[in-house]
Image 1 (cartoon, rainbow, N blue to C red):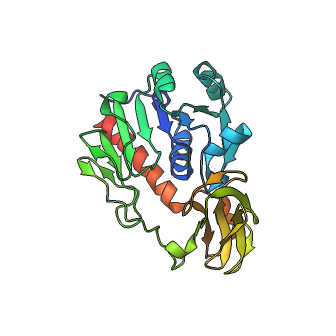
Image 2 (tube, rainbow, N blue to C red):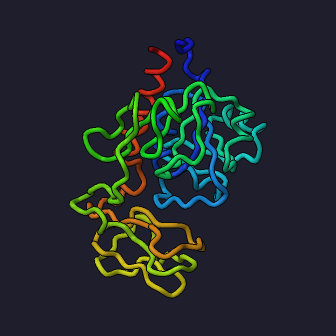
Amino acid sequence: MRIASKTNELVVLIQGAGEMASGVVHRLQRSHFKVCMIEIPNPLAVRREVAFSEAIYEGEKEVEGVRARLVSRPEEIEAAWKNGDIPILVDPDAKKTRNFLKPGILVDAIIAKRNLGTQMSDAPLVIGLGPGFTAGKDVHLVVETNRGHNLGKVILKGAAEADTGIPGEIGGYTIERLLRTMKKGIFHPQKSIGERVNKGTVVAVADDFPVIAKISGVVRGLLRDGIEVKKGMKVGDIDPRGKRELCFTISDKARAIGGGVLEAILYWFNG
């Protein structure tokens, strides 16, 4: 099967709208695909300034010139496309939107580190991001999400690298740059995304228990105020490079994964 003369005839359904999913969506939108996103009712994206999932709360979200708009039902998708927006719907199990759109491509970009139910029968091309998927078994293709030489690689057979539980290195730091709660409670930020903090600064509280920065830098990501959090949950991260502008632009990792998805689509339909 080959792509028609206009690639925008292919509808792409993206499951998830967090940071990595948004990097994929941004690249596909710029490549003139018709893209639609689905999310859960209460997304927990940390890098909120570059996550289209914020549209679930705010009604719309713009990332680097591309705008997502919340629509309440599948029948409103076409109107969003005509307006130049990416439609995003609340549809946790994807069935309602998938049955309506009958997408040519489905991308599972939830980054749950396991497959939550995606199957090859969901679309003519089903792509899974990261660990939890096996190309040729539950999805057609897998895109590597682990930092390193293989980041963004299209896997034709087999699985992505296993989850190590250790975040990628930025500025010489890995685990230290993450912000985690030490207590269950309601999350309340004390700082803002893009704000510079020093090691030892209280960045947020869960009820009355502080979430403290382990390194100095800028707050690159932070959960929304009022979210109920669990003990040990990731609620933010610090960028030791200290460049405020990086908090508001798509990361190199998300761009690489987006490129991998684009390559996977072209490989599959142009092969």
